[in-house]
Length: 136
View 1 (cartoon, one colour):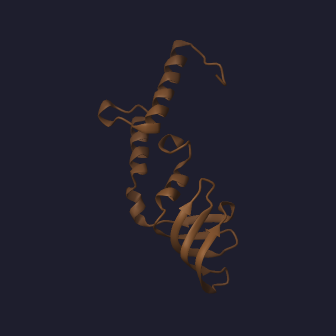
View 2 (cartoon, one colour):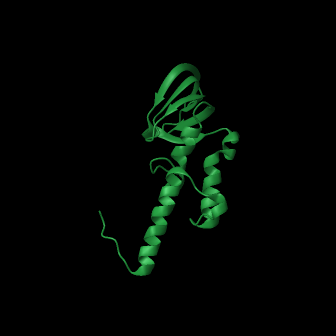
View 3 (cartoon, rainbow, N blue to C red):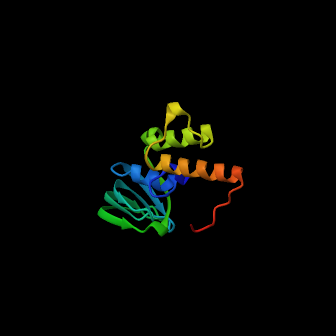
């Protein structure tokens, strides 16, 4: 699904970046839950949150002003429902609808267009019997 993303990253990471600036809930592998303002995220899922309410695995609540959560410790995110309408999902639906062959009325732009052109060029090469040498 990296066709729709920036720098070859997948849909979950794009959704995380789109969720910056919203109130999210993060559950960690140890059972702790953090609900607060998602300030910053990284491609490895590390995130910085502000004004957080921490609920421990035992159910004890506490307030935290800033927190850094390591991506490898995150079990899942709960994002606001408004992200269902994110432009990224429109690109995914268009990609699936046309199976990668975007019609002239719905031209892809940016990196998605470059990836589509590259995939179409490979497809034409395979049909013509030209096999590209890996790494070149």
